Image 1 (cartoon, one colour):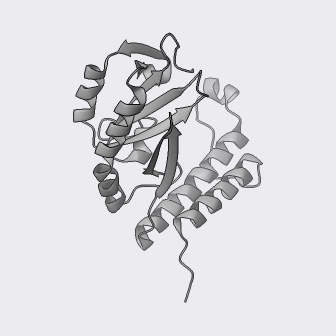
Image 2: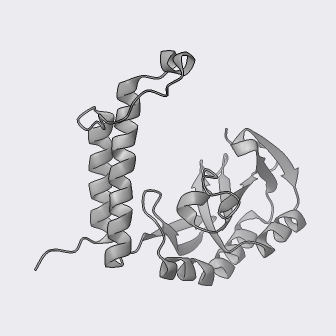
Length: 202
């Protein structure tokens, strides 16, 4: 009987393959230049071949996940201001299965409660233009986005004096949401909470 890989196995396999591709050990030689003489001056064929080789391998891993029902969920623990939160999120290199999305939806309220407690005395900024600029907002503005959100995730950056808590409010498939690859069916908004007077990290 053949081995079925776990979520942790797939993450490890993808990390190794990504490194191999970045080091030029894996190339997709079928990839041709763009066809535009102007663009081809700036694009390195080997870089495109490395990227495509990894993208194709990752797509095969995603097919394996679907075929064998391997979850894309990893569990993360955040400790902010003495409060702990243990929550699921989809690994950035894997896909969410339908049951993964259901799990994310069930913990959304718990994430929001933790967010409210952790950011009560912080300034809030909405990320605009793919994180190139930020707009100061109030919690009511964030609440309006929360009501349309299917799932959420949290990220912590910095130390206590330079603390930044990022709330990702998403819809659709998480793997398509982060970089707007699947917009408008999938996407997300990011709200950055920072200490009063500070700005989000860029």
